Length: 98
Image (cartoon, rainbow, N blue to C red; front, side, top):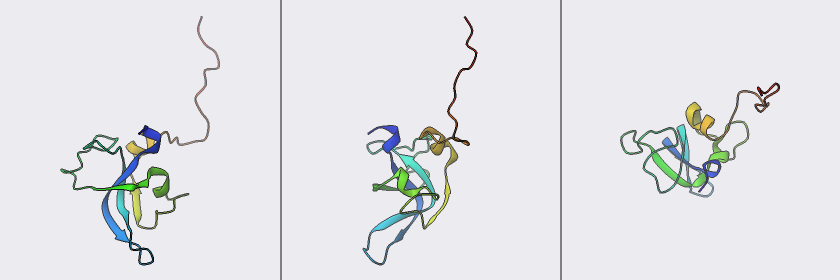
């Protein structure tokens, strides 16, 4: 699984009353299934994070996610590792050295 399509690990969870599926809440981190740590390097067991392999990273983003109702904070290191930037511009070299 590539870093862009990571799953989610979170500090808390909530259950949707309509479909009885659990979703992440609290602080969310990007997690690659098969690993015992988040993308930013936190250990899942020591940090007491719950895994959500059925929820993608894009679904918990507060600005556009489907399952972001319970999300309070998104880890900034995980967000940076997944390719987020503070602005929409990409980096380009305008005057390269010879």
